[in-house]
Image (cartoon, rainbow, N blue to C red; front, side, top):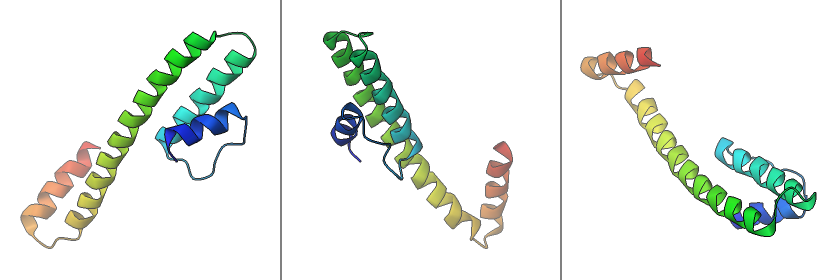
Length: 98
């Protein structure tokens, strides 16, 4: 789900969409809170716009980070299947770090 679609759903007070990634869910909740504060007079329009711009930047950074994690996870799955003793040794060392 892209940011603008999520933003519109939050503004319209629609239910949380299914299948959000952790990054998307965090931004969704922040948008909902932002609009609730605005609707109840806790934020001016200008403050809300400024916060929304920061949330959009956070959303883009988080999506990029999740993509990196996915690539790293895929690489680790492939490496775990290797029969090479050196690769197995390195994978074992990496897994003990986490």
